[in-house]
Structures are given as C-alpha cells and as structure tokens.
Length: 175
Image (cartoon, rainbow, N blue to C red; front, top):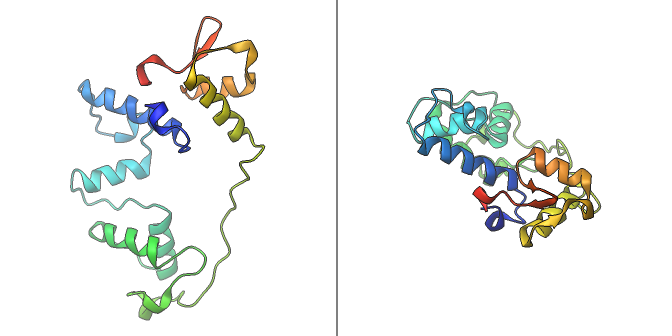
C-alpha cells in the first residue's frame, strides 16, 4: 500500500487506512469512531454523516470558513453544498462573492483575506529527508547504519518502516 501511495504525502494515512480496515474486518466497529487508527473528530463526523446518515455536520476548513464568514451555523443536510461552496466560491483568500448564492445576506461579502498560514518549503526540509528515505526503503531493505537515523526513527514511530535486524524495510503487512 505504501508503494501505491508513495509521493502523495499521505503515507501515514495509507498505514492508518490499512489498520482501520483490518480492525473493521476483524469485527471491531467502535461506537466512538475516533478509536479507529487515523480517525479524528472530523473523519468520524464525516463517516457518521455520509455512511450512517446521522445528523452530524463534519466541519473541515471550508465549512468552518463559510460559517465564520456568514455568521450562520448550518445543519448536516447542507454538507455537500458547503463542501462545494467552500471549494469553488467561498475561497480562502479571494472569495467569489459575485456568484455566491449566500452573498446577499453575508456580512463578509467583498472582503479579502490573508492566508492563515503558509506551508514551510519542502526543499531541504525534514519532510523531504523522510520522503527520500521512504523511497529508498520502498525499493529494497537498507542497512540502518547507512541511513539518516533521525528520519528512520521518525518513520519507525509512524509505523511507515520497521527494522528487521540491521535492515530497515517497509512493513511486510502493508506493502
């Protein structure tokens, strides 16, 4: 699985998806979905809304932005419309108020916004070192002493690699 997801920046998500699917396949379907690996409050709410038709509104960045700008708390039935509105019209920095169906009653109509945060650069970062190491190990197991040990330890903690004696390799169960 890691090989298929490689380069997408979601390696940890792939591992957690695998672990959660294993738990569900083993009959473990907790009442509190956040007990599944990789499932936080947002994902749990999205599953409850979409899969179980429960009246829960999962609030992602787009939904939160729309609620903040309009000053309105939307119900769970508006989820897909809010996702679409946030992704295409009520954009983070320059909202397209001229075509927004909520513009007439929106107190934020016409405002421009600074980005909330800027992603740190990838080039030369620890994320880049981890990604390079994961690519190497995905090709074949490598001796630990020849690798960036800080990156190895980080990938070990996340369950993205494992040590087999002196070798670092992808976990056999999720390759």
